[in-house]
Image (cartoon, rainbow, N blue to C red; front, top):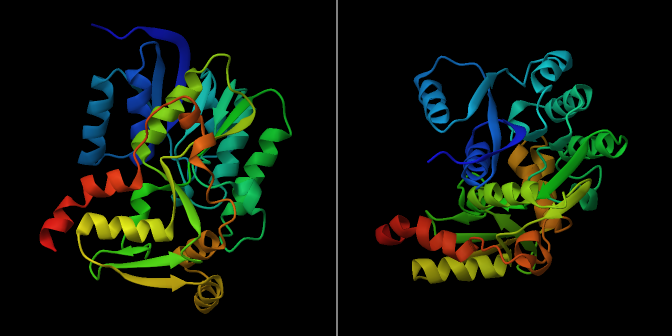
Length: 308
């Protein structure tokens, strides 16, 4: 049976971990919009498989390299879409977020969800240890300065998986260590990409429309002490606990000022704009279940537990 679709034409920019989750959630909705994805041109086998999978699900495909495309070129591609959801993050390079936003406004898109799936950039402000965040504030300024295009910013916190990525350095499963950023009482909001996809689709489908505001969601909001306790419960053994204070992390950043991960650690350690109570979020108010950190860990770390 064909899923009924609305007349809305929606473009998702990018089909990576987040973009794929957003596309999946949008196409599952009872009255799904017509979904198209913007992909970077490539002849790799991986991209060929991705195109086949998307086409089989009824998703349209357009191609452009947003990292290099000029604003007029992007604007031509974006015209005709009612809603644009950008799932292209910082990896596309400095200036990309501003350029995509300028193209959206030039194209006269009715509604835009920029790639702001992360922290509360307004609360953090300019001049933070992570200089990439200033561009996110530029995007917010561009959107707030105009009235032709509606916008919705979805604040999600950190991807839950990032807590456990070896390169990030918070949870080190190899040594069974948890390093607290700032202090053990510092909190962080985290959400899985799958939940972000579901919640973004729900936000876009809400009537009356949510427009020109920041919407907060959360899979979980925990302290680093909570995180260490979770790792202990899941792995069944005590963890080594290190507290990386703000002065320590800023000193580490000063030693290697171009290290992107050290920038992230320093800004998250400061604790401002990186966490909010789950109780007041879009998903909590509407009773939409999300994956907690412990639920994620019990599912994803099972192999690590078996090896320990």
